[in-house]
Image (cartoon, rainbow, N blue to C red; front, side, top):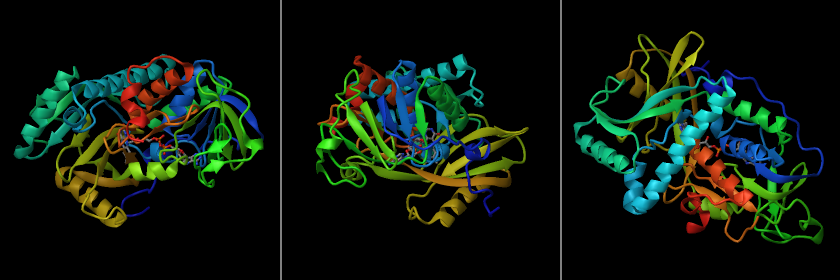
Length: 416
Ligand SMILES: Cc1cc2nc3c(=O)[nH]c(=O)nc-3n(C[C@H](O)[C@H](O)[C@H](O)COP(=O)(O)OP(=O)(O)OC[C@H]3O[C@@H](n4cnc5c(N)ncnc54)[C@H](O)[C@@H]3O)c2cc1C
């Protein structure tokens, strides 16, 4: 155990390891999904519930990458996102973003409740807080904007965090154990006749005999033998997902690998990583309720999590002025942030990870430009719990040929 407790997440530490087989043979399915994090698994779950045959390929083991190291707040309160989107993209687009995330939140709740998923689910209010008087107008402006969009926002001078000066409260948001939820969905995918292949790495996608650039492929026409024949989906004409274990032919391929391996050079230009450092802390005294996110320059993201009879407080913080690779200094900063504000008894966990952000802060969800059968879900910008569910709803509609009211906002073609 290090100075900062176990160097794994509480989610990985409190769930069993998975042991799905690797892909052993060629396969034909309706939809192949690359990536076994929250984006890939929720999309695969929704598609399999629609009666489509899906195969998920995961290079590691499922839910061991970003989604295994999240804070797992399920909220449509995404920092100061609504003010930003209204200013930069306009009120209508901010409204679509709000609608998608509110609907996604309720969809997650309904999946958990209707299936009785044992994942420490709890409704909780979300707070966007400040410790500084001068930031109160910023918070109040965000409240006004959120209310204009019909979001459940109000200003409050009191939050469960004793050190917060003022906050925007979003009522009736939620928290859960993300890995328990996702391991349940994975079992349901298999129960519906789908496949999950671990230790199987997606390398490239070949569509109409052409690769536009996978991990090991240079863009260009590939051999005749790789051209796609089978498994056209309801919308896509078909593609081959090439992996290090064999090919999967599919009507559509969903790229949900957080950092896309396909057309990776373009994605590398468009996506910016945001690294976050988390401590799992035991307190002397009561553990604050609620989901908290700070607007202050050196602020925190905070929630609690039951572990056995006790509750941990998960405190994430970061200092954008430090080099992201200064891990020791970053963790020391989180620790001093927590100790200055809370009665820290012990630090049981520390972990860090990063998520990708798009230039306009709207994730990339939808069909890739110049592609009939390849879809993507990426660039969640630190808010992947509701966003991945909205993504799964959009991708399912696109693949099954239904209209989706949010698809235009998230369409990667707007920037690609
Ligand atoms: C510290 C931290 C705290 C966060 N807290 C919150 C929060 O409270 N609320 C919230 O909404 N969001 C939060 N987020 C964001 C959220 O966790 C992410 O948006 C989300 O988990 C991303 O999911 P994903 O499926 O895109 O990525 P991942 O979980 O990384 O899944 C992608 C998967 O693809 C696999 N893969 C990669 N390349 C290949 C390949 N070539 N072939 C096959 N598989 C491949 C990876 O191994 C991985 O398993 C947080 C993020 C961080 C880092």
